[in-house]
Length: 190
Image 1 (spheres, one colour):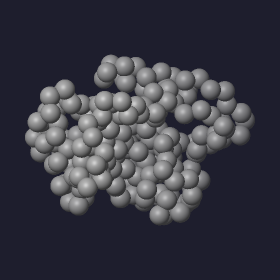
Image 2 (cartoon, rainbow, N blue to C red; image 1 turned 45 degrees about the horizontal axis):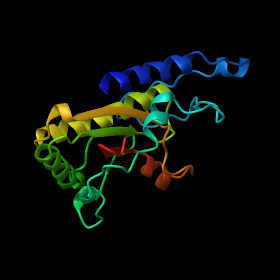
Image 3 (cartoon, one colour; image 1 turned 90 degrees about the vertical axis):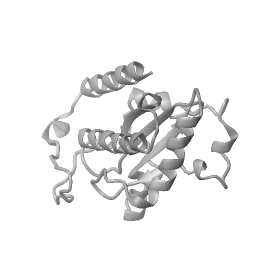
């Protein structure tokens, strides 16, 4: 599965690099940011709205509900919570998400055959390349904490979707906050 996701990400990258550029596109540069640096006042290069999402997001966007443990869907159970929210330009996990991650880590450790995919997501600010890297750092941060909390490393995979799977499409801070997240998908959902 990990090899397939890696191959899909490479294919998505090559596909994105192979697109034709227009004279206006060639003028746009890639914004360079370092973690912790605020947004610049310079315009941010964004992909055309009409371009399809990368191959990787199409593979994992439509989860299958078949074979999912009912306890994972019970709204009264902490395992039904599946998103870790992040601050702007950060991959630091806030303490409020620790109990949820601990419950998911215990579930993975106790349940044979269980697997987890962590999808790192970003808001639309920043270049596509930067957001892919930030999404991966977010997914890896969630995985590291879950392994520290007792989850088997081999049962967790990570992938970055960058800005390609927003929950909200408005350009407001409230909407941006919904898109800065790490989503947990259990086997049968990806």
